[in-house]
Image 1 (cartoon, rainbow over the protein chains, first blue to last red):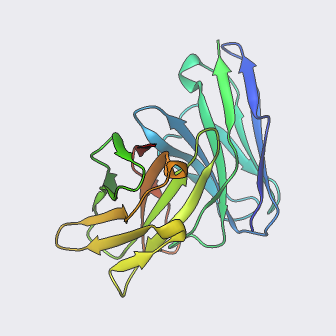
Image 2: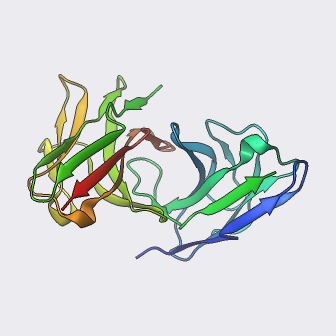
Image 3: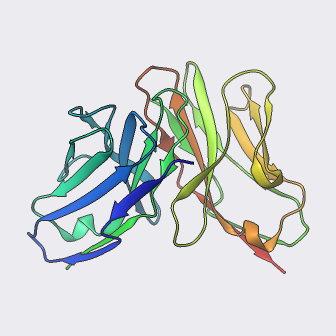
Length: 113
Length: 114
């Protein structure tokens, strides 16, 4: 079974701070995703990637950067964190894009004060 | 643009009851539909999906879903729920393209009372 590991699991930062959320998957999946989950909005796609060095823009990309350094590792970068980015962030991976079954990590809760 | 709607934010049933969680979508072309479950404090886990063929698909733990093109729906059902089925359920849709992304509904929280 695919394993997706996120770190940190919990993070508190100040407005304007710099945050990096990390995700590693160990099943050699091609696709990796970053979602945010907020009450009343469900899951919204921030960025995704279909391989090392590739980045695709999701539905809510403003204020976020992402980088896929290897097939295993996908990072989400908040360079000037704002309170509106307080959320629960999920990383996921899948073998293919179309008809994909996603495997999720346990989430990273970020609070921006 | 693909969209997915889950009309019920919260459903409460008793253990042993049947349940149907509703999902409607809009998209004009080939489409993949899936359901995921999220237990409190955890990530989402895949339940089942449909692309073509038999419109009734079976998933894990006794869940099934039925695709209806005429109603643009993909409702999830279970004949007899257990307290451990209490969770948030997400319907998701993706197009048939090679680089398709998955769009999730807002989720339905299922509470099972004993």
